[in-house]
Length: 102
Image 1 (tube, helix red, strand yellow):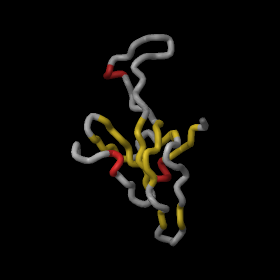
Image 2 (image 1 turned 60 degrees about the horizontal axis):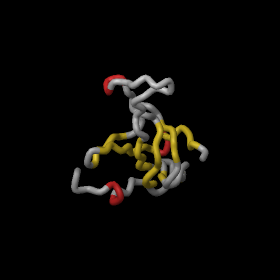
Image 3 (image 1 turned 180 degrees about the horizontal axis):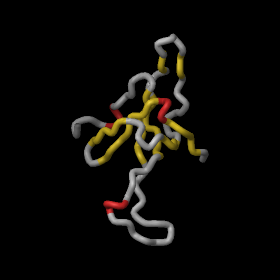
């Protein structure tokens, strides 16, 4: 997918596109972590928001976030997509747990 630009991606209804934060390579006390010990962060920045989701019952679910929000999401939620050397996450609205206040 290297020919695709992340800016050209528009999530489908009910989804958001998130750029995960960089994994920490050093602890707060200054200890450097080997690559095998770094865990993927569960937060990142919303890059794009899909349209409202209409459920099978006809209810409309509006996005809980907007472009630019920092969010915390479920550990096993979402779908990874790699563009170039960077990984991004497509998350369902329901996979978002919190918005990080600025």
